[in-house]
Amino acid sequence: MNATTIRLHGVTLRLESQISAFIEYANVALEPYRVEDAGEVDVVSRLEWVDGPPAGSLPEAFAGATWQHRPDRDLYLGERCGYWLRIDDFTDLHLAIRFDDGHLELTGRYYFSLARSPRWDRFQRWRYRKSLPTLRGRRFSTLLYYLFYHPVLWHLSRLEGLHVLHAGAVATRGGAVVLAGMPGCGKSTLSVAMLGDPACRMLSDNLVLHDGARVWACPELLLLDERSRRLAGAGAQRLVATGERRVFARDAHRLADVELQPQPVAALFHVERAVASAVRELDAAESCARLHTANVMAKEVRRIAIMNEVLDTVAGTRRPDEAEALRRLAGAAGNYEVRVADEADLAQLARREILGRVTGAPARGSR
Picture 1 (tube, rainbow, N blue to C red):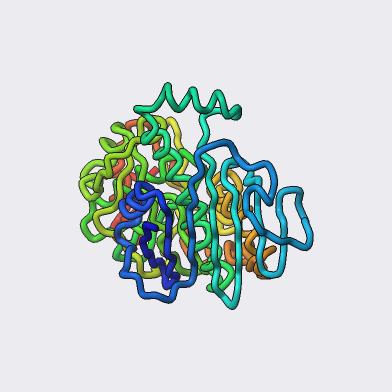
Picture 2: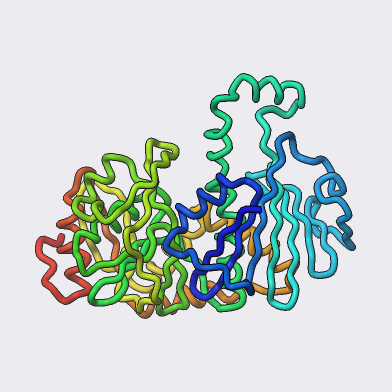
């Protein structure tokens, strides 16, 4: 069994699998957060890889599994344990969940098939035999979400009182700048552009955690295409390419250095694409509403919320008041809308319009 141990904000998870390539992938993606195996951990996640179509029943999926009731067609519950056999848009993964005395254990059984018919699946495997390692590897990023990010974020939410926000965050001399917005609005590129200032350190570009006043990093690989890296300017030099390419010709990068300490929020900037670049102030109520909308629109946050509810059902926990935390967050910081034009000078926009507002420097050229 291959394994690696990862710690994020005090939560320690041991990831195990018989698939060495998956553990190697996790080690690259999560390299800054790896620790020596300390023995006692908060979460154990295990990937069991099965070549073939998904199991059609609970006994076939998990031999010896017992259950008492089913609140959902595909969710079987026992005493502090559960089995989830149909995971929304990732139906080839089945999960066994156990929670006991604050310790969470997940077993993910992933069924890798190229066709639903066994005979056709065997033919496809022969046909694509040279590409099988690449095809398997394309599943690793989603599997890492369910076996690392989801359980750790649930632990930080339910047991530590933190909340997930679809946003990026950069630590500056004046406090953290949170860059929120809809998926694809340009948060990542603008976050990287801010790294052109050597004093800035990124927390994360896609998801952050908050308690209504401070933000914590939720580090992931950054996905940027060639154009985005060019627009980000000097800040892109602080990224390390992993060699992985994702959809839309985006290459995966990790940060050369990351800020993991909680940061007080200085300002919230809601990012939008536009014909012309501009910045305007927002009141706290509008900012709060936009934060909520960005969370609803982001499929990553929706998946996290669904997984959290399943884990709550097994563990008997309840989600904290996320709406109140959003109101406090928007009320504690400056709130702005930042519109970004295509081919805008992002380094200048970051320096004048964003950093200028949180560090006290004059925001020249604002409109």
